[in-house]
Image 1: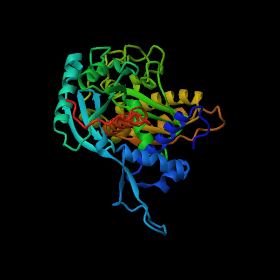
Image 2 (image 1 turned 180 degrees about the horizontal axis):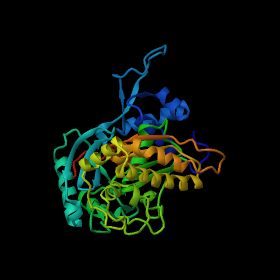
Image 3 (image 1 turned 60 degrees about the vertical axis):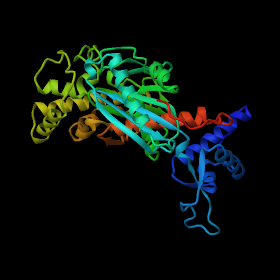
Image 4 (image 1 turned 90 degrees about the vertical axis):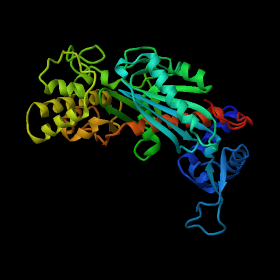
Length: 414
């Protein structure tokens, strides 16, 4: 329910966003359902949905059953119009680019995964590959698909949201890669570029609102360590809007060498390269491996499960490092639900005890914190889903605000 906003236009925009958000969370809803979901009055919902239907943003559907356990005549179901727009999402990870086209309902239109040697790739290499992927997907779209209206990227590294630029990333040698400028000029749409961990947090907020709504953290445990953080229902962003740099919090002063070039970071003890460096008996100040083979990492994890030794000790140190970071975080805010995402979530059994033991020292609120942790070993679907929601919410709030939708024929942008 909207409390008090100064301008009537703001009220209308916010109420409209509430209606679209309710429909986005469900395939079909009646007007009565939307009233219950949003807390808006029946007359307000009726006025908003009538306008949205007239603009082609939502459709009436008589195929769905929205009258279960109700008496009286069947109610007309409302649904988002998938053909009103197309959005593109791109995940750029270590040696991987993944592009997906979605319609306005969030349904997949097309996708491509491409292996790219990112560690040797220049800015031109990366932008060329991404444009080739998007060109191919857009040219193969069905005639019924809406025009491309937004692109959202999730990348590993530090980003500047205002300029849609990747400032630095461990997966490629070039800095200040202006993806937004290149893609916007080519496709004629606005572009957002964000840290992949922030996209994971956004995805969890929509896919599992029962557990991730107001306050929670999504920690990516992979070749790097990152965190997407929500506080009071809002994303917590770094100076360059790259997300919270959990992996580069200090764990051991003047300690192990991190891939970022500093010493003692959490990542230098908890990432996959840090674990393999320790199990190989290498000096902790030696240069981190640029890439880690997943089969090798899985083999080390299985040896750690089988017997006590250097492998198990490496995972213990990783658990301590992550627990140390959470302990510092919880010293600033109350304990919050934690989602562990990525390959590190698949070895939670090897790090859990030491992680929890480290966190349990945070007793400033009287007793051990109630730490809730859920694991998601595959980060890639969450990153893309977070990008998808970023684009769709952009359409809802920027392009499809009251009076902003123009009568333009659906067309493809290639």
